[in-house]
Amino acid sequence: MPQYFLSLPHDSAEEPTMDSMQDMDPAELETMMAAVDKFNNDLVTAQALIAAGGLHPPSTAITVDATGDVPSHTRAPFVEATEYVGGFWIINADDESAAVAWAEQASTAVGSRIEVRALQEAPQ
Image 1 (cartoon, rainbow, N blue to C red):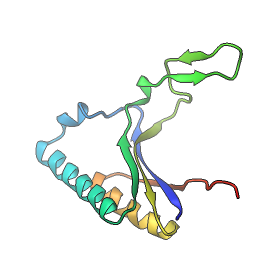
Image 2 (cartoon, helix red, strand yellow):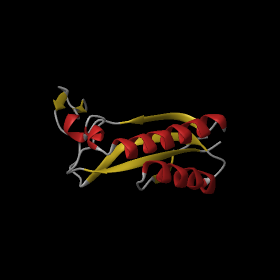
Image 3 (cartoon, helix red, strand yellow):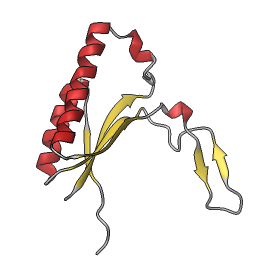
Image 4 (cartoon, rainbow, N blue to C red):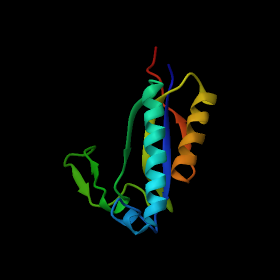
């Protein structure tokens, strides 16, 4: 079954975190968290969930490059961008249409856009 990466974009200028989410209206935060929990539970019930998670902001990234003689570690994201992936789901879906339907539910739950991309399949 094809697998899809559903990603949640964030604005790089804001870098929201679990701590900064505490600044949201408590009722709105509770409603959103309940919607995300329901969405995650629906994925589990449908046996579609492979993995999900939230990511710390790019300012916490370490880029590792071991392609030369001496590995380098740079405390920065590998690319500067106006937006970044703040969270994700990896799901099983019958096809792109099914993955998009899951993304619509995710978008409603988090109140944000969701990008859908298929994972590459192993070569035959």
